[in-house]
Length: 197
Image (tube, rainbow, N blue to C red; front, side, top):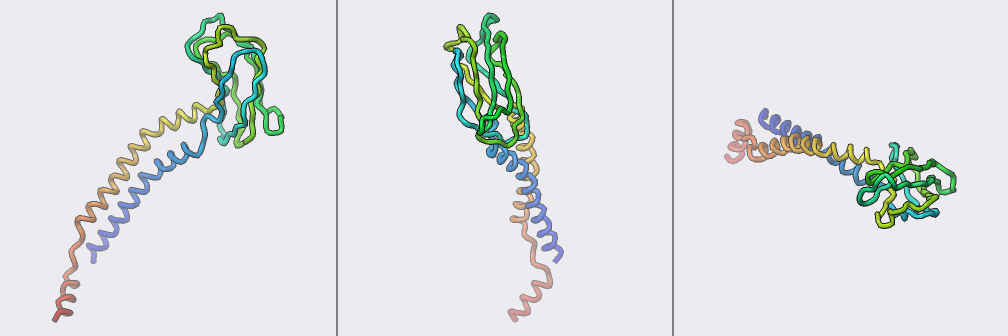
């Protein structure tokens, strides 16, 4: 009887280990699939004029960045002069800013804002002059949460390691219990012998 009790206890511990090992990984996968860390990506011709994005939604309470990226690297003679604002579905400004400076490297951060869970947003950009020499740079404007995405990628390795060690231990316990079933007790053998007689 004691062998069966020990066997069942170890089986329960095995399943608990598997659950504890898989749960953080399952949450990480769900979090990555449920949230969009880059809700807006749009090409931006760096020519004088006004540009309005399609509607986008945010669903995190973290700060979002408004970033501009382009191919290659430009020298200090390139200058960008623009205004931007993010509006809600009614056209009210949520956040706005301006940039009038030289372009260095291949990306700039135009500003940050914290919209929370909000849908129907649009970004309106007004370029006050052409960015000379940037016609073929393939500029792209992003609204994104790079820190959240980076934190998620950093968490993958330790969470996978945890799952392998903890869930693997639970699976090993279950396999051991599967191949080492407890032998029937002496009283059980005696009762079966009496029944055959």
